[in-house]
Amino acid sequence: MAAYKIENTPKNNQIINVLSLAIPIAVAMLNAIQTKFPLGAWTKILPHINGVLNATCSIILVLGFIAIKNKNIDLHRKLMGVAFVLGSLFLVSYVCYHISNEPTRFGGTGWLRPTYYILLFSHILLSIGVVRLVLKAIYFALTDQIEFHKKLVKWAFPIWLYVSITGVLVYLLIAPYYV
Image (cartoon, rainbow, N blue to C red; front, side, top):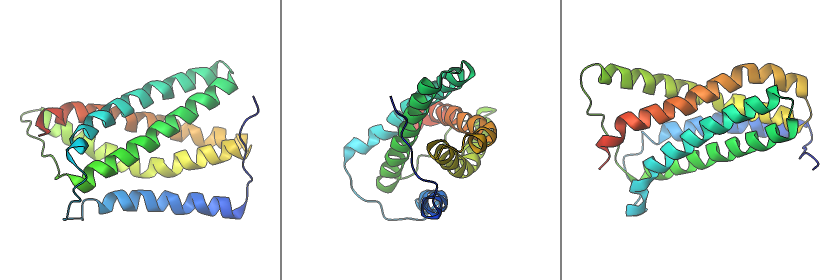
């Protein structure tokens, strides 16, 4: 199977740069929007779907790492493509939930409270930066800039995996408080 390739052009690089800024800004603006859009009761299930998407993405990322360590490039590409699709579906689902539902407040007490907020804060902070890292890593792979890809994924992979795993942990901690 031939690998999907794109051209390394200034325009394609600019698209990555714009998306790297636009996605985190758009997500951050969700908190500023006071008016919620009535998308329907079906959106109440989205946090649970997001938990599954993050958990599955975490597993796929580890499998992709194992594949490349075993020099199975074709499987690695497929798995990382699946991880990217899962992350994209998560983002769409996350936006749909937050534009249509009031924020859920964490109700835990004791040691769970600071644990939750430390995980949440680190998850949010790193998720902002990982967007660019993942987009650039995929861009380098698809433009056959493998040396740049290898250098970047030394940072992108552990951050993406951390964001995925902490997404699951944050979900598990706040899940009892969803209405």
